[in-house]
Length: 221
Ligand SMILES: Nc1ncnc2c1ncn2[C@@H]1O[C@H](COP(=O)(O)OP(=O)(O)OP(=O)(O)O)[C@@H](O)[C@H]1O
Ligand SMILES: [Mg+2]
Image 1 (cartoon, protein in one colour):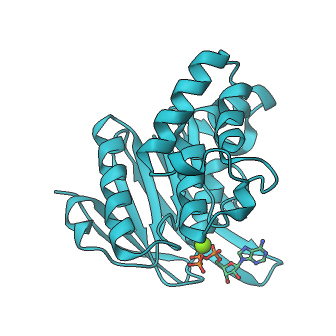
Image 2 (cartoon, helix red, strand yellow):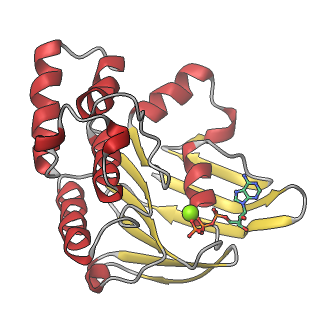
Image 3 (cartoon, helix red, strand yellow):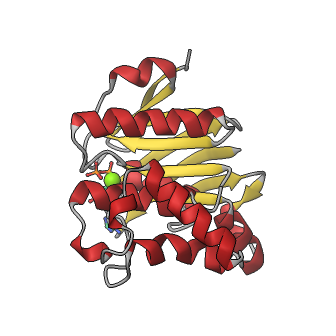
């Protein structure tokens, strides 16, 4: 599903965010990318999504080199990939409903289908009572949950989640981690970046990044 082939990323010619990273992620895998702040986790996810370009090496998603995609191919790839941004990227002036619905509107779904899917997803993450609230008024944890809804509402087969627990307490983190497990069970390939260890890591493949170097791996059980 994802191949990084000797990928390095240097910002401003001096900041070595990733150093010679090679990685294969199979379809249906759940990978947990662990590493301290500044290790290069967000950079790695952005390279997979085509938001950043490698300084060296190549990134392939579904057998396609992300760098040389035509516009329509890039759009198709993005449509089937969900991205939970570390900084959420919500539209603050819109309601919770509109933030979630807009993804499906772009896909051309019917009004009725959108309505039922949005309500179901918001209920799933416990935001049904905030449906008509302005997104900008939500708490950090609520914003994080809405960001997850936006990433998965279009039913992607690949989910890239950047620190999806950063603003959540322990109980909500556990709840959300279980949600990721459910998505994984349904067949979604997931790459999740976090600086935080979690007991549930026993069940997933763990990749460790330190100062841009992929230093160890543990297979999922
Ligand atoms: N657009 C950019 N321009 C310049 N430097 C950048 C840019 N993005 C990231 N960096 C630098 O690259 C390095 C890796 O950053 P990155 O955001 O990938 O780390 P991270 O592991 O996601 O950290 P965090 O856990 O704090 O989110 C850092 O030194 C960061 O300052
Ligand atoms: Mg980051």
